[in-house]
Image 1 (tube, helix red, strand yellow):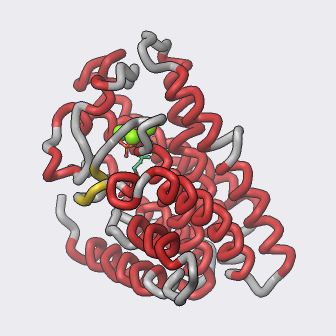
Image 2 (cartoon, helix red, strand yellow; image 1 turned 45 degrees about the vertical axis):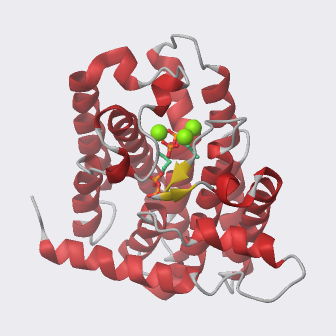
Length: 294
Ligand code: IPE
Ligand code: IPE
Ligand code: MG
Ligand code: MG
Ligand code: MG
């Protein structure tokens, strides 16, 4: 169901994120082409869903957009790095991303690798600078570092690539999706709560919401990889089967995968119950993401 009010709220937050992101890495430098490569991927569009979750959990916890926007940009930087590296020939070997040539196709492999590395470091710097409170900055970094490292994206990407060519079990796939995708989505939501001054119970609820949304999000990504067109997605389709990756679709088929998405989305919405004062947008957003077409 199209809900114009919520869509407008989403577009307002997306616009605020785009505007702020546009200000990064614009300086002149001898390594200007590296900065250009960083901006190329950071500003190539993207749904900004992690930034939105950070902002909206901050607002649900009593904060404002201003309290979360810096952290939200940091999260998009880390996400952009993970996509640049994900597309490299030694990983998924994908030649398009967000409707444009992938970073290494446009800038070459060494520049793309370093642009990813630099975006990751800059993400931490941006995150720390986003809070004037030392105790909050330390908590941000603790959450963020865990999501980025072996117990998050890197561990998940390792298992994802190492699993190519094998038929994985559902439990193995759940672990991969949880690490490579849900970890950062969960960090975004929990950092939002901390930025908004929420309590530990709310941090936990945000984590439970995001864990479920993250799984549904990656299953939808896997379904779209085999059902959408390249124009709709802005990235190659059929990439998972070309790389012989086991996904929910290969293990369960599209119909049962859709059922898991519905179940996880309900689980996410239930996790918010009684924990925050305003959950209207977040509940709508979980359903919106579950049905996304790109
Ligand atoms: C792509 O993430 C990688 C996955 C975890 C599936 P998004 O679908 O959020 O990519 P953008 O940021 O909108 O391009
Ligand atoms: C998620 O998986 C990648 C990251 C965590 C960076 P995919 O490899 O399926 O993501 P897409 O489909 O290339 O965006
Ligand atoms: Mg991948
Ligand atoms: Mg990929
Ligand atoms: Mg994919």
